[in-house]
Image 1 (spheres, one colour):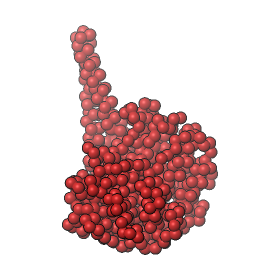
Image 2: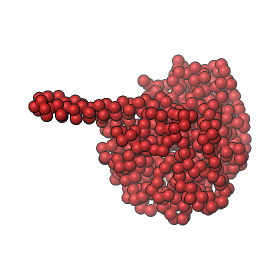
Image 3: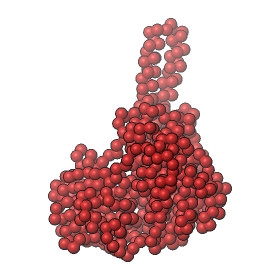
Image 4: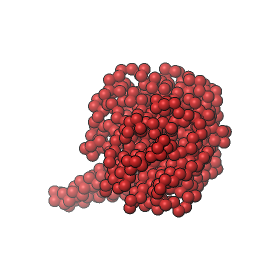
Length: 566
């Protein structure tokens, strides 16, 4: 976990610019200027020798800074620290060097001889990166705030799986390439290769650590698989749990298996304190998740149009008595439909502009766990993030458990017809990774993500549809069953520390709406804090037409290319 900032704009208030970057890298801060260009790096050293950045080649013409971990760095020569492989990889492979890296990273490289800027996320953008360009000046940083501090008006988060090559003189895009291309054939009929890939993903993320490792342990599939494999590999780690609304028996059975762990008490006062610290020490990030409200609003608008037409036709086709009765019924339906449209419109506005990371129920609980880890001297956090988005898309056999699901966990025979689904690279994937990274960054903790290892994802995609669809999160279920590790079958609770206010008066909706109510507290100190993942009607089945989200094309996130050419 490190922080990066590169810009050719003058930095007027360095302290403000580095306000949130310094906690990401508490071990060392480097500032190097070359002409108009300022390279700043804040270091959290977890493996290898303590190596300040930027990295510079022998001629001094190539400079690079990055945040993250490169797991295959030895393929580029014997170096004392993984980041030192970046320039060697660039010199060997040129603009395509990022495609040869196996890791979790956000990186920036400048070749001054060719006046070329390269910046890239990893396959899933596990490490955040923001970009801004105005009037011949640019900035790239781990967070939005440093760029806003420099006076940039419209920083944009760099999308996942993207390498950009930009002309440094004109700031025009020379190329954009995918970091990784997934093979969409579905031909494997057993889980052996997935199991091997998952084992390797855990191993590479836990080797050569100087710092202690911890996880958050729930009763679900994701954290259970990680705890199980860490135990199998005899990795030294500690597990923290908050019971919340989950079955305590399952958590205790797991703790008995792994030996090192505890259930944390998380009373309301601690919840409020954790929330306040999160607001104070993290960059303000909006969890702009598309939960499908716009699609529902469009459908309700169509229904409203039909009802209005029906009201008009009543006047022409019925006698006065029948028309009066029918008009009353139709009028009530129109009022109810308009009310639903207003409610969903309010929720949509909330999703876009009001849902701060620091107000999210799950984020507050995660912050409490990460704070406990750092107090206990543990600085590496292994996360289960990404499993829901890849292995189930928050559903099973076409039933959407959450409204932001598009597949409902039903993988079709032609995977290319739905790939990439909305949550695969973007939407909840982006938002929940940001949640993990911003919280870990605020506490000087390194977050790592084994379920988003490219090989783990690829092995899942290669499974036949029947292998994917036979059970909820089939790869994780078979793994837990195979190793007799306790878990709760067919349950998706999400991380819930026990407190929620359901967005105050704005949903989830009553019987007249679509969302199902969840347990809430009326304590005014919690309003409007809520979990971003609102449970959906579990009997709402995804139609095949919804696989393309009713748009006629596969989902495509906003890209930097769109930002610079609009």
